[in-house]
Length: 564
Image (cartoon, rainbow, N blue to C red):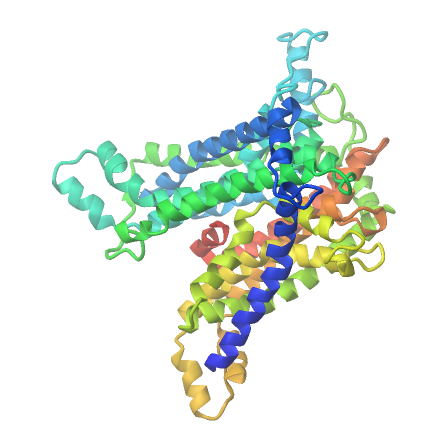
């Protein structure tokens, strides 16, 4: 492709990000630091830290993020080491099943967990029936007024992200380094602490950054558990008062600063971690054969973690087929009517159509942008291509809540993005929000495809008279189609079940996406929670099929899509 055309792509992508990524963030930051007299001020940010309610929300958010990241690391690191070093029965199948926790948004899973572990839930009912608990004083396993339940839900949903990153880092680790240490008499424990762990730290930190930011800004689970003393929910509660109140802007900026500081720290400390031994292994790694008992134990550890991680899914499934599940070990009676109601309800059917429309358009935009970005960064040598790649990855580091808030603030009457509101219809706003948030998946998968295909094929087509764009379309794109399909599937699936953008930008029920409809149903009376669970099961099936397809197409490269 000609240098001029590549430069045109570069400028177009930068302009897109400037207008739809930088501008909303900048306007939010400006509102937090500029007073009514158009002068710089720290008063609004200072008010946040001086207010005990806001301060408690920030502390709780940090505790939630730290607890989630630590829990994910405790689960992920041992599992990744077992998978990378040992052969055991069902190894490949169990590794594929590690994606199961991601097939349900955590706030939907919270509905099932609440039914099972709440004070009137299944576990307490079982203990009361067995005589181990007083019916008048049931235990609160989720920690009333605490974040126990939120952290558990986040860990069960997010630990596969860290697991995939650690497995990818271990697969790139040259086994000759460990073998050399072993030959010098270094025991296994010391080899892990002195060699393996430092070399895979970039992968741990890359996955941990995503987990931390995701947990720090989690909105859905605290809402379902009615835990409002976290920053994300405080922002959500104040979006109706944006005109004259600068405090929501200050809250968003503080959240953004925490997230970006962690992201920049990971880049500064670990950007060159691969130089120490990452990258392509120079010798093949040979899996160690374990005695039968130990091999079965490894399989059992994987199976146990997977079983625990799908407890929320089981709760949602049971709730979706229940007519009544309150103060009983199992549902009193079963029914399938909620599934038909979920597809025929006046709120759910339009929400499914809306999500399909928003997500499909967002993926088309992502493919156009992602192919251009990947081509420029992989195939060309133009100045700024590394900047382009870094900009494309920034949506993974910037919380979705921050972007959604920025879009909402800028789409108000008289603001620069108001033209995106088609009357009261947030179609364009949601499409762009979904596209920006999920673009990194398409860019990473497309870049992997371009790296695998020799540019000589395109040069040959151009030498035979094909214009550069036609050579790209007729030669390279068909060859990288599996990567594009995988990235597009992930972008589509996660856009369909996006929480922050959907909860904040869709204000009227006629425009609700699926996740906003589920939240509204959970809060409604009657069969609302049961219909919401049935809709969650449909979403679970859809996302499960999507992740399976993407995993088959990308293999171990799937973990790279969840790296900041």
